[in-house]
Image (cartoon, rainbow, N blue to C red):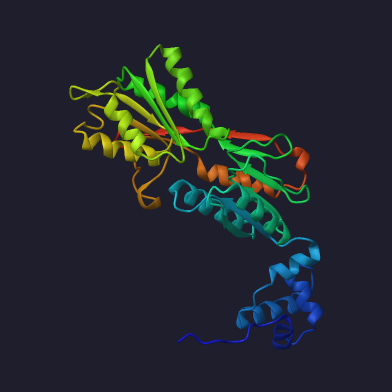
Length: 329
């Protein structure tokens, strides 16, 4: 059974070290004191397992050393990996993360932003699905994948370049007729550029392509019907497919194989995100990889940057292609 014990205070540390409370306060806040006193205080802190109350400390300096992070959910492997990377970046800077799941709900997003501001966080990092989101000018705010305007910095990967890269890789691997499949929000955001890059590459290479775009509320059966409608005599009308996410790519591969088609021998599939099985094992499919760790580091750098005039309004990071078994090696 766990044992409950009193949480040590600065007064306990002072008593244990045999010094004044003021001396303990100086050591805790990094103010120079005599070497002998400093060693006594540090020894007492270690013995008592005293932990600095960063929230109370922050109130004195108008900082709480806490940053709110908002994404739709942690079910999506990409969101989970992104939040984990942001948390590690914040921890490395001695900041804590206050996490909120918004469930793609614009109203809930707005309420959570207001709640975070009331909590006196030092900044907010948000992957938003609310194009009309209102944020206080007093709280640093960094957006992921949605550009709100020059006043709010946005961090994203090169979605346009990734779309081009996917089309070019499929053609490089021998595909003659391509398809683009997308499921997602109808709202305008940076990931929409994946389609634009794909179309641009296909037109530049004079490669025929087909598109199927559905919104979040359309059942996956719409894609099954699409594939069946392009299935004739044991073959699809296209031999290369670019899916807007790895999650969709995985579902498409399962459907193709259930139709008796071989992946990648008959049809090659490329996704987008760089998702791995169980978070850190092999890739779920051949994919355009987002630089999640770099995105997290830049988000944290920007939200903690006090000189907002020096913060770029849009940072676009390069992506890369990775083989994951659903294309020809």
